[in-house]
Length: 490
Ligand SMILES: [Zn+2]
Image 1 (cartoon, rainbow, N blue to C red):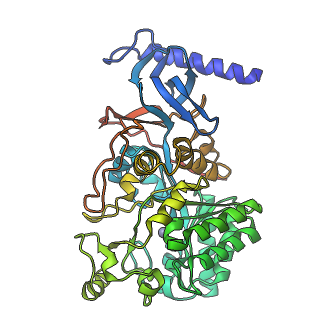
Image 2: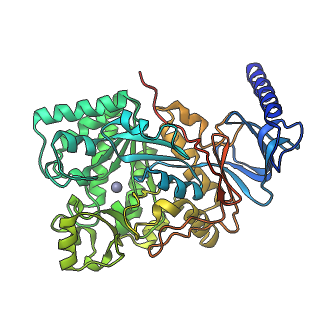
Image 3: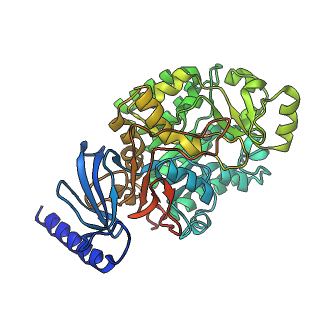
């Protein structure tokens, strides 16, 4: 306790010195500033401590230095009266990892964007491409899909279309796949990504081996299940049972991605299995996006013969993202050959609501690269849609529970392997100053299936590592404070 007080005092003094040095100009600047940035009179909500009260927040050197009822003075002042001051949102599942995606995500309150489902086969290059150039924090898993594609020389772009989807691996190939995953973890990948439905010919032994490797590195395995939908014996439930068994047998933490597109109308049954496994000590978590449609590549194995029966849908439920048109048998064949992304209207509203309102289910966008004018809106608007539509309008869950599902819980999922996440997802002294400030009366998603490239509204301020990137609902020019979120490299 005494040590903690001294650290706090030292941190505050550092803040005072930094504040004085920097207190030169700026319309909001207060003379004799204590902090680089202060957020005043906001409703501070912290899911870890359950603090929900009007407080002032002092920030210097990228960290939260003080949360207090007393007046704080800063070089930069944010008036948060009437607004909620929350930890920045952490998105565990965003495939779009380009500058434009980060812009949309920041306006949706996301301060850390992670690609953990598909992942990469080259962890070092992936991080090098974003270091020093990113608006928000970023991170990646080592991906079983891209490694299998590389080892088996698959011609697919993002997802496999050849051998990596449709052929069992030889023993030499299995060795290379294992080595690739092990190497990615040694290079600081945050987790292991897997999409068994896309690598449908991967044997159950191959998948179990990946769990063994992940367990040794204390890495969570983020899995798109082997099966989705309602048709026995290939239901979402069967897919879930496979990986819960693997997690229980190996000790690897399991994270099931987008549980609603796996379970469809049977989503409540899948949630019951996840909750049951958790109650019996298996480390399993899950996530969802708040929409009635999924999205993926039309050329992928998801659309191999029998897809209508498996998913309970037909051509007209599938939308081509380049034009927004619904498909027919002819256009399905033509575009599948051409390759590209579709939106799939297959998730019942009751399934989306069941997952969004379950306190155990994290919120993650599954956002897509912005390749077409009619891409899925989820990558741009997931978080404001939960807060505006499901919390305020539908009252499907309370605000603190929603914030916990998008801040603390994703940080906790990763912090055993990557201790840097102990400083994320919390609004407390010493935490990283990733902060989202929104108006609970107006926050709402604007991106739709018709007009998906719209910024969310009602989120006037966003800070990343203590740097304001969105101010009064506008981007701040010339700031790129996002940092690599990476596991320690041994
Ligand atoms: Zn997926």
